[in-house]
Amino acid sequence: MPSHAATPSLRDRFWETVPLDKMNRAEWEALCDGCGKCCLNKLEDADTGEVAFTSVACRLLDGESCRCAQYDIRKQFVPECVVLKPENLHEIAYWMPATCAYRLLHEGQPLYDWHPLISGDPDSVHEAGLSVRGWTTPEFEISEDDWEDYIIEDL
Image (cartoon, rainbow, N blue to C red; front, side, top):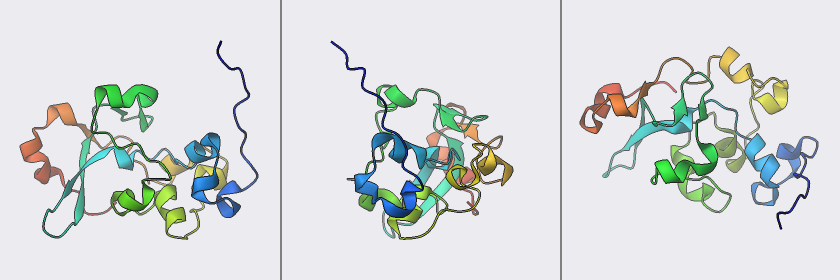
């Protein structure tokens, strides 16, 4: 019989007081600002470890909402999708965007004023011009061999 337990709620300003590994699922998910940057395909130099973001987006990224079109079942469509969790954040934070709340909190930094948790507005990331809304190319339109041509310098 399915459980009908209430969804955990967000504690007041939890991101300032609750360690990442102690957040409930609702709090963890609320950290995502909806920028879509983590869904950009990246190229990592095997020799230096340097990560370059491209404007080539995962096939599941909705370019308008900047959200995954199949978030709950994304691994079924994109097996290589990295599911960010407190347990693996220390391993992958280096390739998260510099503005990412997960990375910022992992590095002991505060969230930006435009983050929806601070602004109270889910569109503030878009209004601040810090999302990928409107400028990505779906990966199915670009050969992986050509991704280098889509490297973006400022992110």
